[in-house]
Length: 195
Image (tube, rainbow, N blue to C red):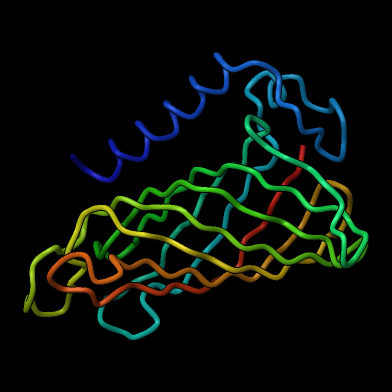
């Protein structure tokens, strides 16, 4: 299965799950602004550019796209900062521009406001990729498995209630569960729009 088919399948499944789901318990910050986004249970969309494989074993940049959902989301106040936090499911893709490893990923993201304009975020989940699962193949990562763990951290700035910009680092690995475990780390910037 190509990464395109995998990405389209993952996003389609997410939209179908959102359309068939009951209303989310969580309330996102802006209320009903965009009818279609709310009908699809969308909370936020993001897009950006990532530097692929910071260790330089593969080439190119990654084009990133991600959706965060209202479905199965939770909004709460942090006890230590007394600011808002949101735990939201996400689906995303990284498409490599040089033919190196691309991925489709899923999981949960915890976004914590530090104040009205600055936030931090941590994400954890899994990813499927189209890269090398074997060992000793030149100029490619040896990822061992097709399904890997994925974690990410971001620091972001809000320009308005809806628009934000964040710096992100993400790492994917099989945690030693398969032969070959180079892991893959990407860094970059993403623009987000909150509905």
